[in-house]
Length: 485
Ligand SMILES: *Cc1c(COP(=O)(O)O)cnc(C)c1O
Image (cartoon, rainbow, N blue to C red; front, side, top):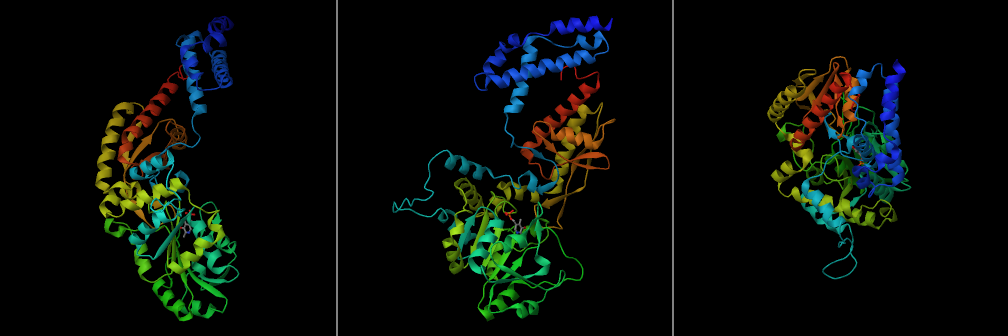
């Protein structure tokens, strides 16, 4: 009689009050509001009831632990899940090193320490310790930026889009800015740079065609209303084939003839020549400064490998005017960002230190042989744990720099591959995304690829434990499972 065996298990379910008196939940009660705990316990009981209701035989239920201690444990896990942060660390196994949706660059240890020190305490953010007078928050990184780039002056704001906006608003509001049609880019989240620029109050005068612009195009567009010649790094795409673009140096020459400044939105901004490490050549910020460009803007959290910020460097006269613009205030950089940026920039004083300690640079320049060795070791260990029910292997697909920089750049890389018979790679990717910590992967040829190019070596152990743990859990579910979910 099916009803009878179910009744027996229903009667085994402890009362809510009894579960709430378990030690685990009493301890949780010191930190979490009671309402949340009661809700979690009720959810656990409801789940058990529905599980019992669906059971086809008593056998299926024999393994069920319905003690109040076990149910309290389950409730505690639910509470932890709910009370945990929404914004939390994930393992980036996508192979896209600068992944905008995953927060672009992880910070160097020195940057984290600086954030902690400045965040936990008062600081000399706007106080000169020498004179005891009020000072500017912008001073803390200006000298360092000038030293690293050769620029006369510098200013840091909230992000690079803000930097471009502020510079145009200061130098070109109500006037014309000449820019090549091939450089009017849309950046992530259908966010169009031309629209940011226009809202600064500057009128964009587009010259040339999508694939070709010449110096004479700029020259012909110059009028008495021209305030600026602008060059934008086409960071997330490349015009190929029959192309022509005007070099920064030539633009500077033209601008000098007419006494107007040149600005370049560099997007990413590198301080190290990465072509020495197998990446495509990107002009360094300091090379661009040397061509005489008057203002340069770039992000703090792209190839620089620091916190989100917009860096503006260039000639003193222009930076001085930008600093006085009232809009600097709504775009101002906060103290935690400044702390992290200063610490990151200091690492660049020694190039080798920067390459070792700035996570983005380390990941981008790691020899593929190292990745292969790691992948082999991890695959062998994973296979030992889950090989009886899941196919584990390695592959050598390319990884990407990403993040609106070096659009063509593919990096040699190495991946762990997973195939779980009976479960699609898409479904497996979804389960990995919901693991703790989440593991974000890509799917190719119905296989899950776990790319090690975007995983720091320090996280290899965590990656392995998380993936193995999840696969074992899935195996458990498959084998008559759900019993002790
Ligand atoms: C990424 C990028 C921006 C925007 O920078 P944020 O720091 O994300 O605001 C602007 N211009 C170019 C060319 C870019 O590549």
